Every structure is written in C-alpha cells, then in structure tokens.
Amino acid sequence: MDTHTDGPDTSGLRARAVSGPGTLDRLHERLVAAASRDGLLDVAYTNVDTPVGSLLLAATGSGLVRVAFESEDHELVLDTLAGRFGPRVLRAPARLDHAARELDEYFAGTRTRFDLPLDLALSRGFRQLVQRRLADIEYGDTWSYARVARLVGSPGAVRAVGTACATNPLPIVLPCHRVLRADGTLGGYAGGPARKSALLALEARGRTRAPSGDPG
Image (tube, rainbow, N blue to C red; front, side, top):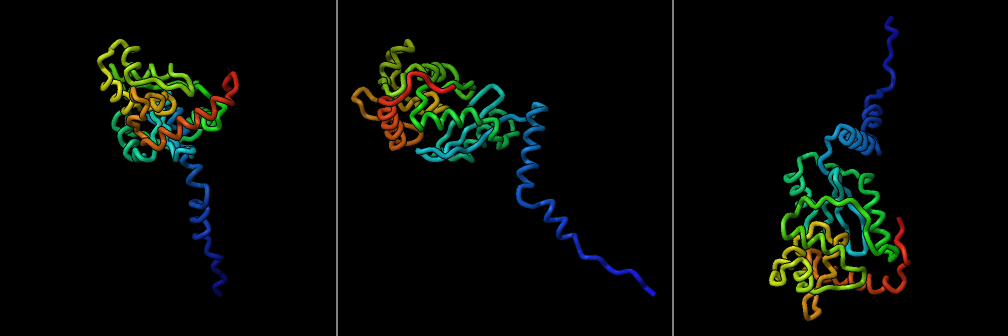
C-alpha cells in the first residue's frame, strides 16, 4: 500500500519569501555596505525632495561632487558621473545623510552656510577658481558677474565667469544663484530662471529670521 502523500506545495511560498517586500532593499543595502567596505563604490547617490523639486545628490569618497536639478536629467547626470569616476554608481542614501540634512535646514531658513566636504573634480582651471569663490557670497547677498571676475583677478573675463556659473556642478551649495547681471536681472541658471528666483526669494525671507549661528 502506498502510504506516501504529498504535503502542501511550498515552492511559491519560498519564492515569495526570497523576493518579498523589503528583500531587494536589504540586498541592495548589503551590496552598498560591501562596496563601501572594500573601496569599490565609485559614486554614491540619492534623491531628495525640496521646494525647488527633486535634487540628485552624488558623492565620491572625497565629498559631495554633484547636485542636479530635475531639468538636468538625473539619469544623464549619473551616466556622466559613471564615465568620469567609474561604473560602480549606487544609490546609497546613508552616505548623503549629512548633505540632505543641511539642504533641509537651508530650505527651512535655519542654515545660511553649508559645511560639507566637497569634491570639485568635475571642474578645473578658471571654472573651478570661480566656483570656489562663490562660497564667499553671503546668504541673501548678490554679486554681479563683473564683480566675481574682478575678485578672481580677471576683470575682462565676465563671459567666462558666466560660463563657470552655468557649469557649476554644485548649485545651491556653491551659490551661483547669487550672481546676477550688472543691471540686476537674473542671468542664466542650470535649474532655470524660476528656480533661481525662488532661491533668492527664499534667502530674502530667511535673512530676516536666520539665527546667528548655523546648526552643526
């Protein structure tokens, strides 16, 4: 007499256990942790929601390397970063927590200066010189392109200053939105004129209520 009886088919349950909700996230976290531990993570990135839309934040081991608006096409930006730094580009929000928190504080009006390690490898020469100087423009203040040109020692290079601002890989953090034309009009901006205007308006409001010291 055949006493064998088939038990319940659990193959589907096993499959769902392996690929159930949260499993891929956990596997991804392990991949990121392993890549970071072994020095195999070229670029970490995340997306944050802000009053000026979704921002892509990306960092190398040296620091924040890219802030990109939606209008710049985040996928294209990531492809460019992969070509520049290497193909191991992974979503790793924890690596960008500090930058994301400082941006939250900036948009809340409680931070007037960023305190982040930066990687300026995406720029060089005159452009990098200009972009470094942008950090000297105080919150809520504006400079003209001509003033920036004079301060970097090239008073005739107003157009080149405009190009350096337009190609700034770290907008908001290096505040190219604070640079205007000599007549006070906006000039160009990677995020578009509406975002540039919004950032200036935010700082005009925040300047009246900003604390004397920024949160750490």
